[in-house]
Length: 400
Image (cartoon, rainbow, N blue to C red):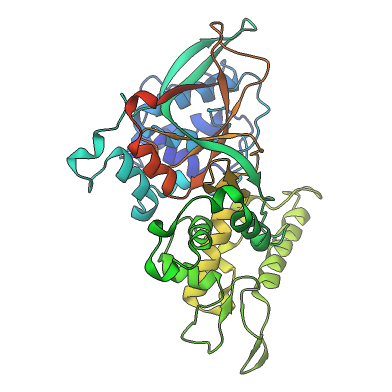
């Protein structure tokens, strides 16, 4: 059964003269796509846009749970829209990790901690209460009311170091900057990661974990790590391949100097921008929308397998920043993240979420409220630490 969230995500890049139709226009597709619609979700154009988006998000929690939070991107300007509710009038900003939930390697930490199809019966021992996300009407200290979302989970740390944002076609990939943050952080070096890596990576375990984070645990860890270190050999090339320039070194092939794939990819994005500006679909200072970036054409000159590695890293790191927490854990955060933001692992969620404490407002009973910054990704170790914590340490937080 296809859920409405799946269809909303696929149609996210489409425009609508009335933002209400970002949801309502998809409802007639129920029969065509065997679409499972949330009960009670019926068109009512007299309602404010924020109210419609919030009602839709609340209804979707029953079928999509934490994937509803994963869909949140960008900074909404809609008044009174809770931060955990997706503003569907915004263009997609980046890849959504929650959309690849069927990838076993990505869901591995969740299965090991919260339980799953291939976990044993003891995997649920440390599971605190419900595994679901639920809503609650929150009375604020300023007299207003908002629809909040609550979930139980564990704090994986606060962001202590944060790299610059990678934007495909606008900024060079910040490989060296991000790696320096990872390998030079005292908090990172304080953790013994030798037990976390394969034997052939015990000489530099922190760097290997960094590479796994960068690739979002995709492909073979060994294959991706070798490629990122410039030690990957493609069957069609006799020279090593280097991610930094996406070309065989020293840059000369049988037919002469090879084209720099990174330069070519950025040129493709510039050409896309020129076409869109000529047709009036893109402003002079606007970046190329995520949906229009030709990631599938990146690094095509360097062979099938290595080009897939490059595309995978670029797509998943676009509009994201590398971070290290005060606990020494590494991960990827949305571009809107800031130093001091909290990274939390919610019970039942497949990915961590970055939260920010609300300043100047609490609930009427003095409770702390959070703003959802967005979905993130973390190395596996904090998940294993969460697994060992007793259920009484799980903290329920409220997001508004």
